[in-house]
Image (spheres, rainbow, N blue to C red):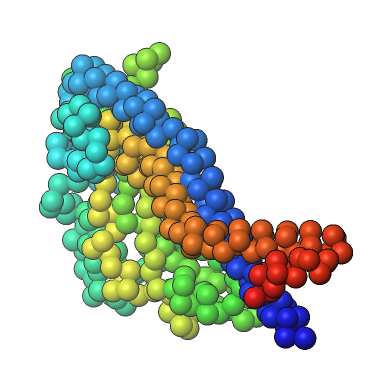
Length: 361
């Protein structure tokens, strides 16, 4: 009886050790295999080398051809008939230090942007005594508005470029300075707190307002006609893939709780159109943004796979430690179980009792 109880306990302990060993060994092996696969499949160094070659080729073309061509132009922006001369700016944020800064070629950036002080046209100084709300200046138009409704009127915008030989005009899409969007929503909490909108319980819709904060367009000179035009390479005429190459950027204006239009102070008219930029479509920074999907880190996806593979291999190695400690007792238990099976199959002769006692303690 005692021998049977001991055998039962021993088998339960052996089974527990075997389960722990199997789990530890299986998990560590799986993570190691996945880690090795990610290391071999990431192709990090080749991908980064190819992206650097493409980027450096773009820098060479910019330095030799497109940069001097763009530098010889002058630009102005006209909104509602009021022109503003854009000023050239040669300061650009450098690429992030991801280990490739020593391999990338340097260049002189150039973009045209709004001046720090926008002049106010003479005809914009009107009497505002009849206005319900105080007038507020607009950065780009240089004019004033007396109510929010005027902000929702679509504006006609025009880019004018002089390249030293002739003048070209580029019509921009008309857009309001304040847009209203009504859409269905899942509930009032999402509408109010996540989208800063007004929720209508009757129609289950959310009304949100967006203020036109900035505009960035990329332009190029047509080889066929010689005229400057919006460049829609990469899918849009904007400057960043993270905005889906859209030229306009909007910020939210909180909708009033009564369902009306926002007040002028809430719209913050001094920040409307606060940043207007014209860039060449061949600017190396735009090329880098397209290559890196807006992250400005070469081969980032492959680097993440490489890092993930290394982490999995390290974790797998750590998980292999308990498996190594459990390997010896698991193997001994397997040998003892094998001998017991052989003993039972042989009929358990009395001459083998000494060996049987050794198995059962």
